[in-house]
Image (cartoon, rainbow over all chains, first blue to last red; front, side):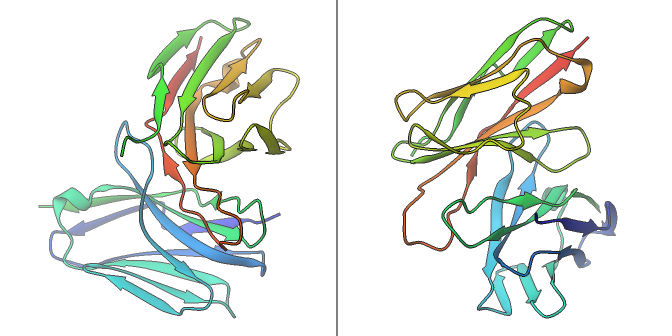
Length: 113
Length: 117
């Protein structure tokens, strides 16, 4: 089955700096890669996703890049703000009717004011 | 549009007791998932339903866990008897489950935090 590794486990940045979180996956059949943000006491919320036919996707301060050859994808947050502080999870999903997500272990991002 | 509802939000029980969690997915969503999230880890899929049928329950510990979605809408997840290692947040998620679409966004509920003493 799919295995997703995520690094780093914790990340502290100064407000206004950029943050980068990296993930690798093992199953070459995976073709959908969402990123979720989880705030304390809440369920994960989708913030951006990318499909395997696209190399990069951007939404305001958030961008995701995908390298299918190397089987890794990354989340980039620019101009970080204190409200970006949360746990971020990457995930991978293969094609097919089940479309199940395998999650990484999470990154605790802290934006220092 | 109302989100995924879960109850209770918190539950504390002693080992060997039983417990049940309830989930109401987003209206019209055919696919429903139950995840277990142990502290400091990502969510791990326990079971996936498509309407009222089970798609995958390969990671559900069937000796103690059971789940049902009888009318293809609400779902319950039960643990009987509970063990210490079952302490976790149990998340329910739903997606449209539209056939022919290569991906489906999953929407998560707030979760139920279970503590087994």
